Image (cartoon, rainbow, N blue to C red; front, side, top):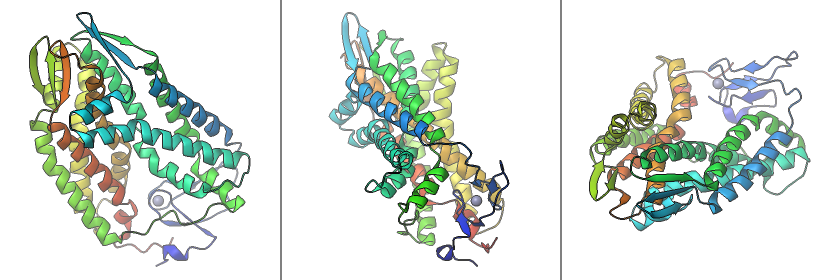
Amino acid sequence: MKSRSSLGPDWIECPHCEAPCRRKRLPDGCELRCARCGSTVIEPIGKKTFQPALSLSVAGLIALFLATIRPVLTFDVAGREQAGYLFTGVRELLHQGYWMIAILVFFASIFAPALYLASVSYVSAACAFRLRLPQVSLCYHITDWAEPWNLIPVYSIATVVSVVKLRMIGGVTWNDGARWVLCVAVLTLLAQQVFDRRLVEHRLEAMGALGGSKRVGMMNDSFRVSTARALVTTAALLYIPSNIIPVMTMTVAGKTEPLTVLGGVKELWDSNLPAIAGVVFLASFVVPFLKVISLSWILWLHGTDFHQSTRNSIHRIVHRIGSWSMIDIFLLAVLSAVGQLGALGSVIANPGAIYFCGVMICCLFAAEIYKPRLIWESHEDLTI
Ligand SMILES: [Zn+2]
């Protein structure tokens, strides 16, 4: 078996399953694919440059700054109104004692997007102008780490859903901040598309600036498997209370109503909003359920060679769509931000939201800790 640490210059690691693949001279327009999982290992560089990622990430940072200083929504009921900023929901959740949810919302809607965009700009500037900037290798690893936590696109959808919900009880006005949030979401998605990791690695290597291994060897494989199993079991246990206990209490015109995840969906459905109800149902109920089931199945089959490529594809899907269940937590943050008008219309968090966050965080970490290579490596000789 070829040890990963003994890879020579003729070998390159698959970015998805970490299988060693032999470098080949490729004809024009051809790409090198991993023989094991089918991911692209080397693709034609062609005329790609670093400028698009640089300009999109810098524009994204400016838009994020404007999104945080301008109000996003104004909610009014019976002549009383309240404006909500990006950070008002965080402050309100902290005020209500839900610090864990507040930290998660702050992290995923402000901190991680800022970190991701700043590190992409820094690395792209270093590559575009061939600058030996300090800590550029560390910043490159940060772009990888921060990307799945940059959930501003999910936040912008949650804002739209919250407007629909708030319109049932009062008037809502879109403010400047909402446009900037949408701008950040679009710029982030575009920057993710054009920020080409292989191109960056190629340039950093040529500049001698890519130091250290991508892999941080803090956990051995059996520890990874047992930790992932413990996390998925915890997520499965938390899934039950997260759907039974209300996640929020809404007060409308003096009438107080606690809402569970499915209660919120039913309310949207009853208000003749089937499309929005469908989105929330999928993101908040179906996605967490499927994540727990599929991760349990992947981990249950660990060490066997059954359905390896199916498990690999499912792992990739879980990793990609997993964060969409944050929509309900962002919804709670946006509603809490503007829904503080006492008996006229208010929204407060309930303990169900903590269980819901628990399910999401456990699944996210489990998918992160159980690397796709573990699906393949248990019995397989890695020599290609
Ligand atoms: Zn692979």
